[in-house]
Image 1: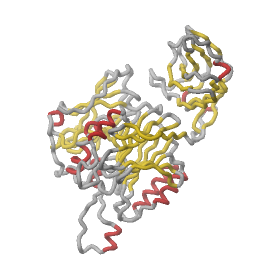
Image 2: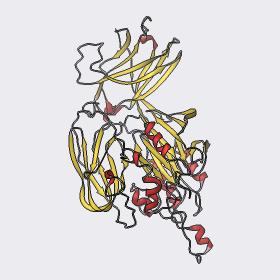
Image 3: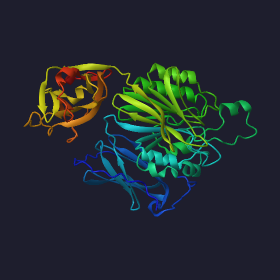
Image 4: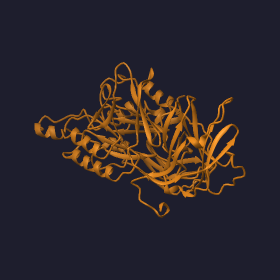
Length: 522
């Protein structure tokens, strides 16, 4: 029997805080095609799918063949709770909020369906896949879908961005046939966000013969009603279009669409986009677009990319047709991955705290080409420079400890380290930290430290590292005061210890320059 994959992990022992419950639904529509073809999905017209997910919660949607209770049971952190209003409906949307970050939760609907999700870490490490045009053709199966779905699972993708044309026609049955059922194995456990294309908004459609030619050109019949019912995002405009935005960790994602359903819609979309960009302070901004640029012919690529360039957008993604390529428009990097008859390719994007890497992947051959790396363009301000410190030699490891720092975590965002590595030996610099309130029984011990990521040193030279620090204590999930920081390099067996203190050029606590100053910063 086919089932959704269950993510197995050990859940941390923390206190669950669930306070807010939201449940909304769209109007019932009798045209939904019920397809209960397995016991686990009995009664579902569309299997449950994760609409939104971040470090504080997640939202689940599903469609039932008959009106049923809009209730979701969530198990996690050694507690269970029931969400939703319990009203009978066919289109369901239930949100769980105030959850713990980087934690596994199991959700259940009735007695026949369950899956597990993991809230994000809010510390900047996650993987994204981007592609488009999975079904914008009259020939279902022209572009292989099953290998693509398997690749998303195999590569551990946390978030998928689809750039248009997830269906051929925009009826409920078509969305189920071309998208929801083929992607069922990943929809229940992680977010697949869609920027709608012309097919998703109602193309092809019938135009009455008596319609004047100029009216056909201005409004050929695009209609986002079905798309918005199945994907109840918070849209940029309450009654038109399919553009929306969301934040995952330190990245803002913005879904745009070439096609509009009313005259003047693209201009309103650009106005909304400008407001979003003007008020955003995310580390990175990624725009993904759904095509096509057909009627109404308002799409203005020059105006769009001029706006993206003015606001320092880091990446634009597309895929509303055949082929795979990468280029720049007004200096904005663009990566396009559409369908191919002989293969399916996508871009895999690995986000780090202050950088990200884009790489092309063939679902049958694996990663291909050279990865492209992008560094943050956001300015950092100095909060404190750590000087002096104490050298601690223990267990053939060079350690340099900066003690009694006492800076609140909400006063800084990360650490910058300038480091001189003099030898050909490949090793790693490890950053360890501890908040206040820890007993330091052994100055050289690790028991009271929390380990951060390893910073790789591969050849002689000067290295400049930037890394984000957690905003909350990893055990209590509360804000903390940074008390100690230690840099450590393990010395290989048979090698003399390194002089770690002489290699450190500077260690600085920094914050994002566009943040508002608080009392703790002064």
